[in-house]
Length: 219
Image (cartoon, rainbow, N blue to C red; front, side, top):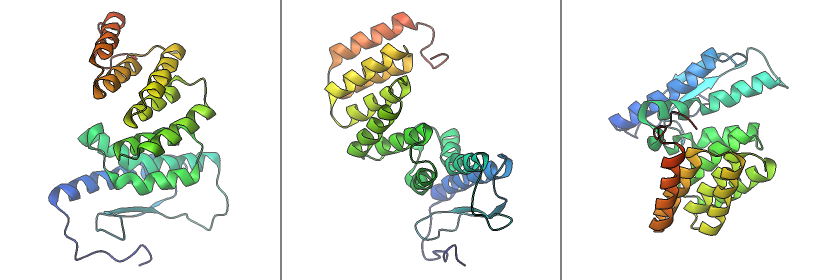
């Protein structure tokens, strides 16, 4: 009962039920197979509180501290739902249903680079442009030599209509580690802001450097 009463009056659509089922199944699979996780207790797609579904684990005894492996298992479970969504429905179909999962992961590891990257992607997807930029700057400050951190700042800045900052960040990422993903992101940002001539140059560079890897065969 302490999970919250089911919202019987709220009727979910068939598509919401399907997406929620895969989301919760992702959590459950991680809970069952990742070493160090608490035993799986309950899985439901009956809406409770703000959640469309719930996957819940319980420790076998009272706990007051956790090992690194156990904390990593908790993080893995937190992202299991979103990963399942993307695997089944595609990266562009990820929903806001992962918001609570990301909040939980942030509580567990607020400065973890992997967690920050997911929070940045989520902020970009949900239109939280300033939050995405702030998170990306935090990631760059923590990992100034990480090409992926600068690439994230480039994407976040472009979404927030800060093209000078975006160009600088993408340039820094490419200088640290040339990547077709980053170059494509730069071209995409330029297209979104109407700079078609510069976007064309970036795409030409991409074709010249990675002529056989346009579909992600290699970074």
